Image (cartoon, rainbow, N blue to C red; front, side, top):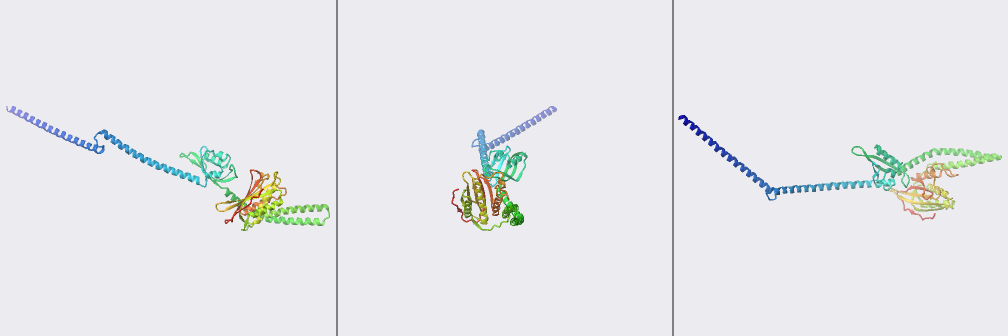
Length: 454
């Protein structure tokens, strides 16, 4: 019984423990549920607050999404405006740079040509057209515009083909209408990133005046050296000729034989001719001393015209234009103009429609000083192309009785006065000699000559 009671007590005790555990579990479970509900409620309240602050006063999720999209769109629009502003600034900078580049190219004193890989001139500036004497260079093939056999075309072709760089090359260029020009050329290839040649850029400078100045200086030096060398030789010739002439005169005065007298007369005639040539050569070779005097060119022209009219009255001679004062020797300048005018009158004296000679004066104002240009024209047969380069050489003549020193003396006189003389054939026929003389820095008022019919 005691065992039965003991077993019953144990069973009751076990049930009490089990009941206590169940109650504790229920309490814990309830507490957990309470805490979870409270946590969920707090989170929901926070979300509501977020909806209130971020949304447009509504707790609807669709409205919140719409508001979010509107915010994103607003930001994108702001970014688009900023990008447009930056793009506009960059475009304005690019346009400004392009305008500056165009202005620099258009106003630069050197000529500029850009040739692409196919040989087309893609760009040029006004200076290039002026230097080359060609209008409308852009979008033409360089070998057609410049001439396939010209020095410029040869250099450009070699640059495009081999990428060779040419620095300060001097080439001759003949414009479609005009005289030969001397050009300074620098040509460089245009390369892409991979090194392939995509074109060539050419810089041009007109060196014609510089080349002419160098030629005049060289000619002046050559004339001075020739004068020093030949003066002594000419004097020896004159002494020998005087001796020969003296013996010939003795034979003529002392001999009675007709044959001896004839020989003596021939010797005297030849010695006179040679003496004349030597005298003229001495005038040419003698160093000239140019005084610093003012020469009234208008008066000088009038005197020259009057003198030639007397010797060749069948030729009509007239003058026109503007004449100033030149510095130098009046006698030498008059001799030079007289030689040119007389040669022109003799060249057209037999013209079918009557010989006509014109003298025209023009004052050309340069950057630092002015120049007097005097042209002497005639309506004669002109000058053959193979003769023109030799006209100013000593002893070269096309006349049966000429010494060949007339034009050589003209050139020497003009060169010694700081000028130059050139010759060309006129398109309407005849020849034209052009004398250019520097004018003094303080030039008095020029004289406008009266036009005289020729």
